[in-house]
Each structure stands twice: as structure tokens, then as C-alpha cells.
Amino acid sequence: MSIFLETSRLELRPVTARDLPHLIELGRDPEVMRHITGGRPTPPETVRDRVLPMLTREYPAWGNRGFWAARERTGGRFVGWFELRPVAEDSADVVELGYRLRRALWGLGYATEGSRALLDKGFTELGVRKVTAHTMTVNTRSRRVLEKAGLTLLRTYFGDWPEAIEGSESGEVEYTLTRADWIRAATGPTAE
Image (cartoon, rainbow, N blue to C red; front, side, top):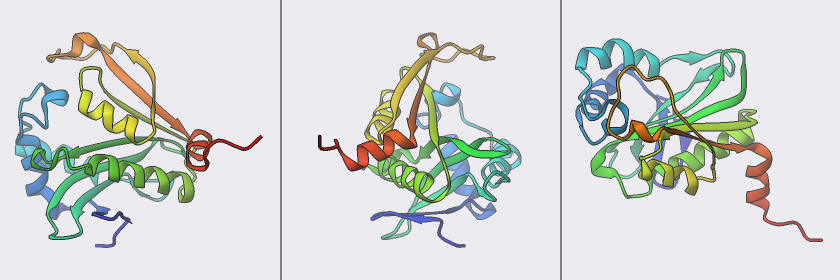
């Protein structure tokens, strides 16, 4: 399978059916799923029939996938998956950033490393003009990753979710980063 992106420690490639056991493992971990389902495991058949097709979908706006399996370059351990996918079917101007990593690998900087690399690729090669990301207000770990990757808080909002989970009373947050702000951050302040 071809590599979509490499970082110093990670390889990102398209998700395939061979990743199903790893995806089932992610969906079973109550801590991984805490801010998604309230910690309830995702049944394996749901991962197979709904999650895997979502992760392997092609996006016509850029003729590519929007979800990437991540593994360690040294040792080849499955890390999780990253998302960088167009929000609209017909345009790659605005994309959503996301990730889901194995709990055993939390705190190693992989989420930030993979996110930064995807942002760089999106803004330099894929024609992205704006990146958006969403998480629960109480998900401080994910919020910190987004901030370290360069995104800024746009808003807090309250959705009409079918089932409340712990922390949902605090709402959701949306973070964004525009290409112009990414360039400004990369080049530093201009001399006057």
C-alpha cells in the first residue's frame, strides 16, 4: 500500500480492510471512546459495516481518501488513524482534521506530529484554504493537540445529540486554521 505521508516517526497510508482488527481494538477501548460514545464499545460488526467504509471512502473533491492509517516507522506498530477530508463533496477548500489513536501510545506526541504533517500537506499540496476540527469542550487532551498543531478556538456550541454523554453539558468546540494564518505562523513576524 502506498504511503500518503511520512513524518520522522510515522507513516500514514490509506486505511484498508486489513486494518479491521486494529479498528475494532480502537472501538473497544472505553478511554478511546470516552468522548465519542461515552466509553461504550463500538460493536465489531458496526466497525466492519459502517466505520471501515467511512474510513476507506474516496473524496471526489480531491480524488483521494480522507482517512489515513498510521503506523510507527520503526517497528511498524499500528498507531491509529488520522482524518483530513473535505467537508463539501465538490471542494477541497475546507477540510476537517481528526484522529483516533491507541491509548497505549497517548502522550508520545504522535497526534500532534501527524496533525501538523497533514496540515502542511493540505496547505502546500492539496489546495486547502481552511481546516476545521471539533471535539467535546471537556476533551482537554484533544484540545491541546489542536492548539499545538496551530489551530485556534473559534466557538463553543451545543448540538442536539441523540444521547447525552458525560461532559456533553459543556458543549462542543470548533477549532480552525486558515492557510493565511498557517503561512504567517510558518514565516514569523514580518520586518517593518
